[in-house]
Length: 162
Image 1 (cartoon, one colour):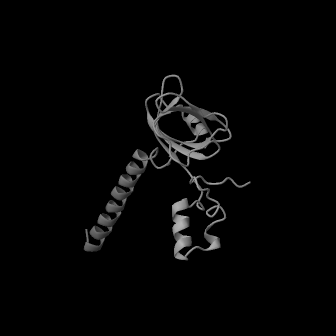
Image 2 (cartoon, one colour):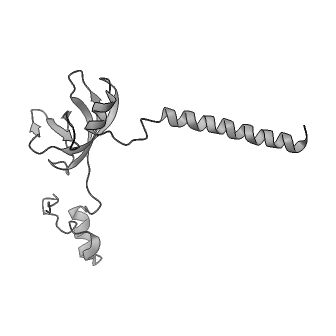
Image 3 (cartoon, helix red, strand yellow):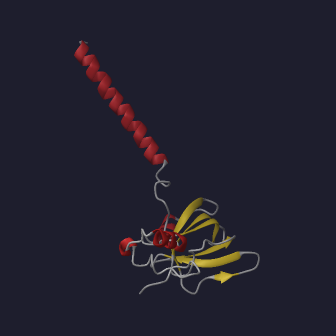
């Protein structure tokens, strides 16, 4: 083989090995690439009890039930399917019915998602009251920081605009 042919063989061989390695990595991370699964995706995948994943959707209005010792149950919906969630712990300040949520945990044998972490989602215009007040006090507040950013109540809860 000439020098040129050996170089070409090495390049092609390296590309093949790199392609196989990339394929194996993507296959291994296939389920981890998605940040969360919706209730519809969970029902379609037939996830086994005990398998950990993230569940995302909206907290269904009227489904929040507070129990004893920080126990909470609620339903997460994506508009097509609903999944019951059980959680024990302190909920985030932004958590409320009708709001987006991402919970991490696993399904139990009865089909209830047992969450050990709950994260409340908010839109990009949300700004905590303390930050908005500090910007106003320093004279850096602009009205275009978001329509709802200025509509934060004294309690720190975001006002719902319709």
